[in-house]
Length: 272
Image (tube, rainbow, N blue to C red; front, side, top):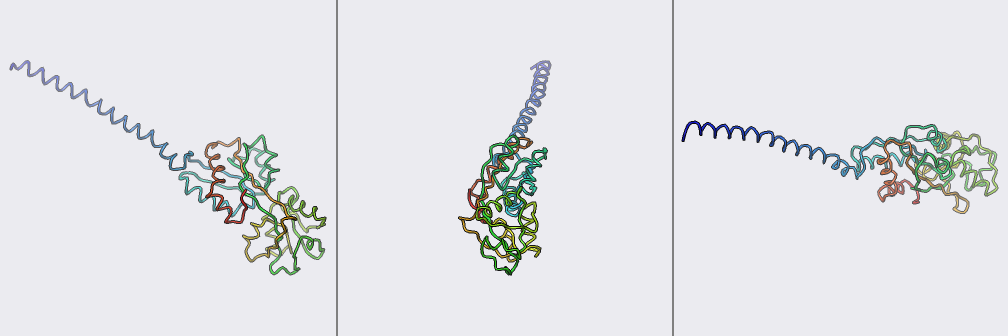
């Protein structure tokens, strides 16, 4: 074989090897690109199908304790998602929404407040119900047994303001029984009413059953018969101004799942 032919074959082999390197590199790059493209899907799958996000949820004061538990459960089931709650009276939350507060979802303690925000929220879903009870000071010194006892001028009664859902429910049941109560104060939310009774600044107050139960032995709970009571409904909705639409919708939908409903039921809320 001639030296010239051998030299040509060596040159061809070297050229082929040089051309093969970029091809292999390109194949390797394609695999990496495919893996990277698959990562978001994997993350979405791990978080229950919704994109991870930092959610802000405006919620009625009476949901303070149960939503802390629910939020922790949701974050555990949806890695990468953080849920931050802002609790206040429903009327205050509504004002925040109308003012454009940066939030993703809203849960109120009545449908009336939610209905007043039709241009700011998407279709709401009732996720729980509640009832009122009488909370009296420790030991129930005035022996309050029923609603009409609250009309006694010797008893310092505290109620929520009528603009607040629990205050509106309180007025509703007292008016229905033709019971006139002159409260020593009208508070901005149910937690404030309960606090007054717990601290001995009031002898009795009308609060939600779930709040009184959470108070333990700090107050005495007096049940109100269903025929004289009011049912509080808790609607939840995403806000149209939310920047995390998909994640917010996933959280609101989760509130109706068996897992969330059990958490609410364990806290004393009734199923919707």
